[in-house]
Image (cartoon, rainbow over all chains, first blue to last red; front, side, top):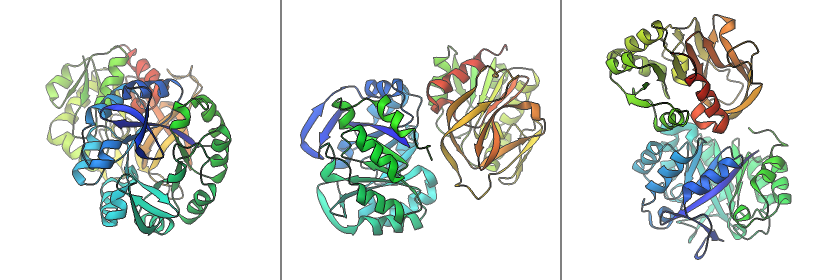
Length: 242
Length: 198
């Protein structure tokens, strides 16, 4: 299983949000490129980047910070946050992003996901940010009526090969991931599912590994020193990467 | 000077930076004369083999890369750039640069294609990279090469079947994976290619 250390960028700086609340922000490595170098040196195989400004306002002001991460590490990168138009996707590809995560737009405009898959194939991932089984959109501030599982099935049929599943109540709270929902999603779709949110301990990493998830995104727990990246990598390597 | 051949095939900055990291001076260029004058050349590539070959011929780049290879200068093909070193290409179909003996065919459909992600490259003893044992490297590809000369295989990877991860034939090297996205180990491999005498 792949461990994706997360770098959340806001205003050009790396930050960490607690439970997706824009009011609760903790700052660690201010420089996103430094954070990326740190994770690469610790053995990361992928890096997960979130452009928080784009998620909330749809403004792409963090291109320089993302370019600096691309310059800093020789690893594949995935990016989420505010990718809503073909121009956004093209801009992200030009920045050297390997996997593009569609979030809110997938809820608002599923046809866009289908068009994106036709153009970018396996480089497209869909982020399923759920709250009580229903998808949330627009930077977690709005709630939809779409069931996460139904949406995932539809996107998988359209050719989406990667899903990133986040249980919002658990993001940045160290209370453990929602394993039941995660397992349900993994069983429902013929695609790789990456778990995100709520990882607080190595036991959580171990539990996610056993669900058959293809990866796990870890942010806060690493920044708060709950455990180290090499420790998480060691547990994740017990199950081979897809 | 090291020329990175620009034929509209993907982001080349990562490759350029990997070479600079290895102590080389790299220029991204689509000028055939600059390529001919280079000490060594990288042929990168992402995308469709036929479209790539059409463009390489149209812009005079195919001839320039061939001249470089025939002059005995180090040439490194990466991903699609490695596949184009061979002759017959199933994608198109079309014909590659024919600098190496062999053909390029589709990965079997019984595995998820493209093969995308980290996988293990196992090195073959007795090649210029035979001192390495195994490395995890990052792949994105749907086709693989079948070299006509088995001795050209310097590393192999298992994905449904065994295919060459690295080929080396004298001054011509090819890497099926992306060394510029394979962390420290990827940089080590680029470094070794930079040490091949030009």
